[in-house]
Length: 636
Image (cartoon, rainbow, N blue to C red; front, side):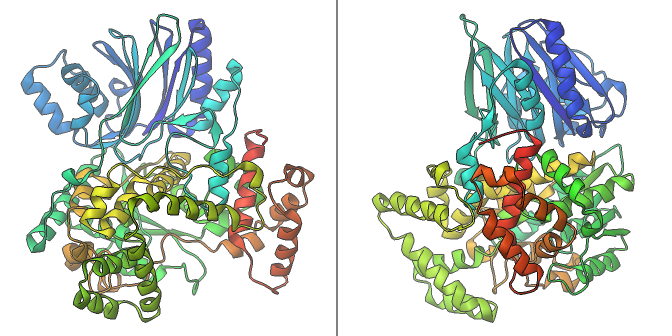
């Protein structure tokens, strides 16, 4: 887990190297264990900040050269040992220098070529690879986007880095204009998808998409040419149908192997433990594999709806793991929060991101360098509230009345009517002719931009809705629930969560690993019947069945979905109060014309006096945007 930098620019090598070193310094938190810079012919310089996880020796330092390739690489290639053996049997291009995974990736590229080598990698990664023979710069990200990679293309110049702040610094140094991407900002404020496609919050910086590989070459006129392609797409063909007890056993085996691979490390490994099914399953499964991990949890005031102490305690008692807890509010202060927003590079969607930040700080304080995370389980195993209505709508669509009656009977009483109404709406929508579906989606999309009275976003414009992911129709034909899950995995939901996970873990110089995002696990889940993914009114039914005996009953049978939540209203009215009052009274914020600061201030005072409930959603987003604009010296 590291910081990646690449600069392809028609300037002197000394200038490139100086700028790359500055970018590496900005990414120092991603790699406190070392720094390297390499320059090649063709106007390229690669930079790297190292967080040493596998092969701690200098033999694994980067940028790393092997044959015609030089790479700066962020992430882990989990199946590198088996691939290393396969490559040795085929015959190596040159002897190994160390024991790490980066060298195996380079040998794969030598033997298979790019991008074919990516098909053999099971891991999370983002890298820039220079091919000296072809004079080409390859950029790639893992299949689901666990690791970030950003690129600014400007004529003859390409600036690449793991985080936006490093790209922004280089652009300003080279005199390349940057600004706010108004479409992305409008989507964020309207609570619509904003982590879809190439656009970021800062124009003209783009993100390399999950499962995507770029090839940059120089044309005869000196300008850069970009060839962008996908090397991986989640599709129905990759998710063959399976069902029944044998398939449950196969799922448990796949998840167990995914976890086994992600426990490989030359430094201590721990786990986040929220008390939910996902993280609890990983901790219990690790125990079955003989790994009693240190675990780390965020807790809140006893009695809070988002406090999960009793579930955390149940897992700790059941497995005997050592558990460390922190109340994120203890770390919350105006100055530290303002810096935190700037460090994330883009506005945040909710207060739980701060809670996650506190957990990773706790992990680092205990000397743990790698932590397991349950990210991805909600998206592939039906963890979100929309899963039940999607199943009910599918049963309506099929006319499976007896199954629908049983499914509604098993649902929570307060969710039965709500779920049925949602299912009816969804089922009716899916009966629309194809010619009406797109206009209907665009109408709903535009509605999002007119239901936030405190946001004055009309001047930002209404961007077009993002196109649906390419295989949505195929998954919808399998079931409406499968289409729903596919949209979560390939849309804004997972992408946004993984961005937060990466920044928070890297701010603490900790590597986060997500066993549920092994492609074998995801593809298996999307091959299971809808009625085996949600069963007896319970989401994550597959996980409950397959790992049931390993879990404490309190966790296995829980029906509530707390998520990784945080008491935003208490934080805004408490520790962040000085910051809130200062920003709402700020001439700068008022002059931007983006928020109705007067109304926000009146409502905040009324909420402080206990007269009304705080609209924490609107206030949170307003604070995030203002702090973000200030931290990055941006204006509308």
